[in-house]
Amino acid sequence: MAVMIVPLLLAALAVSLWSGPVVAHGGLSNYTVGETWYRGYSPDTPASEQIGQSWMVQRPWASIDPIFSVDDKYLACNNPGTPPTSYIPIQAGENITAVYYYWLHPVGPMSVWLSSCGDADCRDVDVNKAEWFKIWEAGLLDGPNLAEGVWYQKAFQNWDGTPDLWPVTIPASLRPGAYMIRHEILSIHIENKPQFYPECAHLNITGTGTAFPPKQYLKTFPGAYDPNDPSININIYSPENANTTKYIIPGGPVWDGFTVVDKYCLGC
Image 1 (tube, rainbow, N blue to C red):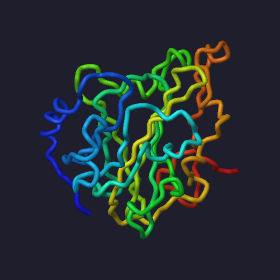
Image 2 (image 1 turned 45 degrees about the vertical axis):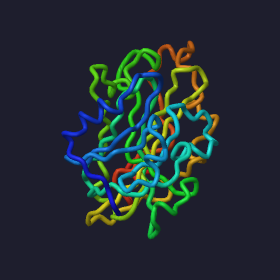
Image 3 (image 1 turned 30 degrees about the vertical axis):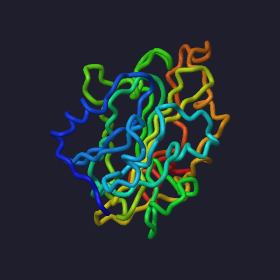
Image 4 (image 1 turned 120 degrees about the vertical axis):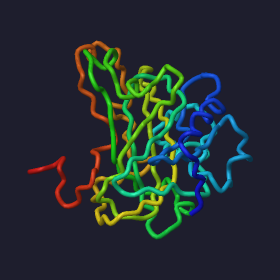
């Protein structure tokens, strides 16, 4: 499993080279684990210079435009989402940080998912048939209502020219193996017109854990989301939402290492 490893001090140079002008939206550009930086895909660079390269760890995404339908096959890993060449090595219990050079939207939930490739090479796995489980999520953090409150999506933005960083911990008890990681931002700032921004990479997870989520945590994309889910098709500016801070992040609960006892369903 070949990887391109670059010291973090070169990341500053990468920002200046690849950040480019802010046009709209944004996307996941790079990953860091500890002091090591891994280059991701850039829609602004010719695909021929990236796809098939030994350093590529991310499934390509052709543009910064969103996906609008929960039934879109590209909801799993974006378009075209073809397999990369390499894996990011990481130990269960370590942080992986997603790097965005800009992100413009302020409203909506963010989530991170994993999918085990089992005994297969992740390059041979159909992302639409893969079973994904959520390991992290964040939504509304504070505020008077859904429209005026501070969401994690806004809190992670930087407007000083530095990258937007999204750190997440791989569950320490997770059994080792080849996995795909999926970051998703769901923007709900336009009435009843959700915008999904998913990106995926391949991980080689090591460790001594044996845990794996029960069946009820496993989802497919498409399939994980109900098109009629009020958390997806929502008007945050409507009168009924003017005095509420209640928002249920779609996709079910987060699995953080529990296997036998479901901490979200104690006593049920």
